[in-house]
Each structure stands twice: as C-alpha cells, then as structure tokens.
Length: 418
Image (cartoon, rainbow, N blue to C red; front, side, top):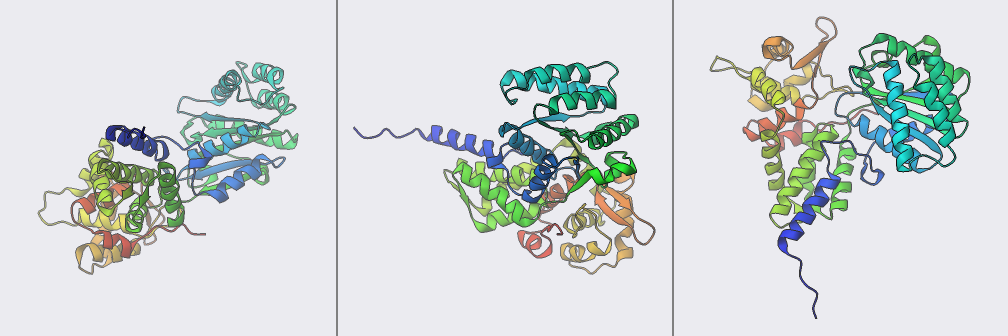
C-alpha cells in the first residue's frame, strides 16, 4: 500500500508550529541552537565565568538581546554540569535580600528538576541557610556563595538590574563583588540591564573596576540579523528570497525583537499561501500585521508625535527621517544625520534650522516625549526613548506610502560599529 498523504491542514499547522518555535519576538531565546549573532559577547561571558576574580556587566539599549544572551550563556554553563548557573529577574520591589531570596528559590527549583550538578545537594542546603537569612548582607551572601563554590563554580546572572530602585542594594552588591574577588571565591556575578554606562547600572567602588568586565551590547549589524533569519528558516525548513531577507533586516534597525517579529509574520504569510519560501509580498503583509498589532502605547506615541491641527506640517516626515538617521552603538544621532533622510522623504533640501524645532518638540510632553536629548547647546544628540518605536515608525511610513523599500535600501542599514 502507498504511504498515506498528510492532511493539508495538518501540514499547515505543523509549519506554523515550527515557525513559532524558532521566531520568538515575545520571549528571550534560551536555546543555543536557535541563538544567532552575539558570538563575541557570548565568548566574553564564558571567559568571565571561567576566570578567577572576574565579574561582569552586560548593558545597552532595550530590545538588543541582553536577556537572550544571558539565558543562552546560563543554559550552556548549566548543561556542562560543571557550574551552578542561575538567572534571576529583578523588579522595582526588589532589594538585596529579596534578590538573594530569588536565588535560593531558583536553586530549589533547579534541584527538583535535576538541573544542578551531582554532589551539590548538601552545599545547596547550607548555602540556602546563609542566603535566605532575614538580614542577609554582603557577608552572608559571600558565605553562602563560598559554600556552594566549594562543590562547583557558581555563576549568578542578575537580569533587569536597572529596575532596582534602592541605591543601597547597588552599593551592597558592589561590596559583595569586591569581597568575592578579594577572597578569590569561585563565584561570578553578572549584572544585566538597560543603561548607557556601567555607572548607571551599578554604583561601584573604584576598587572593583579591575574585577568588573564591561560588555556593551550594541545594536546588531546586518550580518548578525541575517544570521537570525537564516538560522530560524533552516530550523523551520523554509527559505526566503534575498530581497525579502534584506527588507526584514533593514526594518529591524539593529533590534533582534523586530527581526523575530517580522520574520515570524512573513513566514506565516508564506505558510498560509502553501509556500515554504518567503517572498517580498510576505514581508509587506508582515509589515501591515506588525503595524496593526503594535502595542497601544506605541501607537499612541506615534499619533501624538505626528498629528497637528495645521494642514501642512513636517512632524510625520521629520520623525520618519529620525528613524532613518544613521546612529551610533547606543542609538544616538545628530541633527545633521537627519538632513539627508528628510530630503529623501520630502524631496526637498531642508537646513537644520527648519526642523530642529521638531526635534525639540519630540522631546517634550506635548509630543511624547518620544526622543531623548543629550549633550550641550549646538551639540545635542537624540535617541528614541523606546527603541522599539523606531522600526514601527519605518513600518508605518512604508504602510502610508511615505517611503519605499528602495528608500530603506539607499538610506540606512544599521551597522554596529566595531
């Protein structure tokens, strides 16, 4: 008898399931096989974890993949069975004691699931007593980590550390890092969070500077974003036209969240058409869906920034030019960077004085604030307060016919600086 053919609906559902597994815009990637790009940063984290006396800080803009990096590194270390590797998420209610309480809870869950190395049960129980104390401070933290480290090397990833509001907590962690390094404890702490500088993320002693390795997470360059798409497509058993991949990468503006989002929606569009190859028209459909399904907060910001009672105004066009402007590793651009894209959007050559007021307005409450301004007079630089708004502005402009795919190709592909 011949082999039974699968039902078309079953094939479609199987394909969508594969697509949703590999392209995940809503959750961090924690599977090494699906993780793409950031090889240098991943290697740096492993080096920190395996070097005595070193600790780390991973910092950068929102949406650049810091949490995915930490998750993949933690999983790799834990899977080696040579490390007790734990990742903790902070929030605004946390302090020094509550963060270590989360650490103890995570150890318990990992023990129950069999994730911890063998021979560490007694050490975990003794460490939990020290770290779970009501009045836990740097001394108790160091004591607990020392107990654990006698059995296996310990790596603690403290994610979203920027959300912690208590300054004393940051000081206590600085004290802990110094003590761990001074006593050469085989325990590494890696702080992860949104910040432009290490000082913004952790209030450090000058004396721990040599023990704290800084890892800046810039936006991803085009090769890294292409790697995300191609890695995902291979896992999903799909392909894509080069032009389709190019558009996905350009629209992402260095932010892997949007690469996953657009690739997922474009792949679904192809699957719904019974195809395993993504076309440019699938990307257009992905753009329409992404614009329609954007967070209401982003839609509201865009509306407030671009509407005006005046019939003729430049707000939407200037904002689009800002989204097209070439920026540095932290997303900042100068007014001079807006001139060329504004000319491409409007077909007119505007000088800086003609649109600098719009940039100022975008920094005020009346139109946002949608941009953050930094620097001194005549040397101001600007950045989108919410980086995820920048690709939305471009997608909205494409959906409205304000720019074309060719405009993106000619004007700006984000390239992270070496």
